[in-house]
Image 1 (cartoon, rainbow, N blue to C red):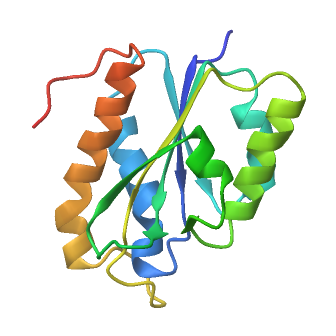
Image 2: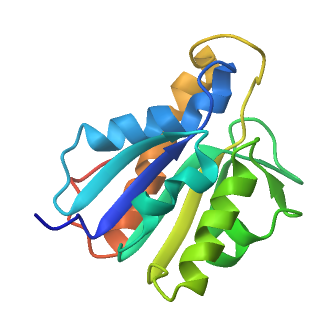
Length: 161
């Protein structure tokens, strides 16, 4: 059986409140059952995600993102170059591994044609399981932004607000 052409990769550590934003958003995308889209809870696996990224047409990363000039709840759209520049933004401990995985796939000549990311600036990164109420309220906007990207990549997505 062949793999789905598109991968939605939810990243984050759910033991640090809003650090789990990417994982929660990915679960919401997964619940839609989109054709030709596989959703993976990448947690904090980093470079261990290399086999998941390999042989895909498009990879969309969802994560909590801290970037200069942003405030909690802001959405941040990232392209391939943004995802490779660690000095521009800080995910968490898993960022370095994801950058390495993307670079390794590129060096192997098997990089996805499309790579992007959607992140949300967390309200809290305190120890604790589950999103803050503020992040939970903004989660639909993160999911909607992810669906917008997938739609531009040619994935048929349901109409969403």
